[in-house]
Length: 49
Image (tube, helix red, strand yellow):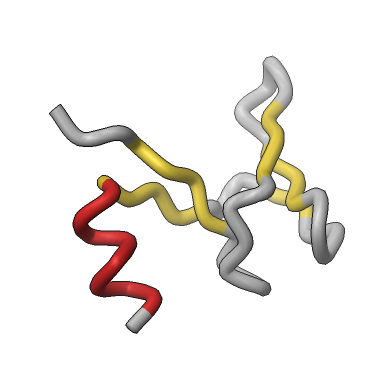
């Protein structure tokens, strides 16, 4: 099974943290919210290209 990866929709960073309320925060650009993109590793490679 492929590893799941959270992606910031603003800056495409993988440096994302979450809290207990399903809210996410990007540690790079500071974006905060619930809309984060989740990819499998193979999908991520296609997304970044």
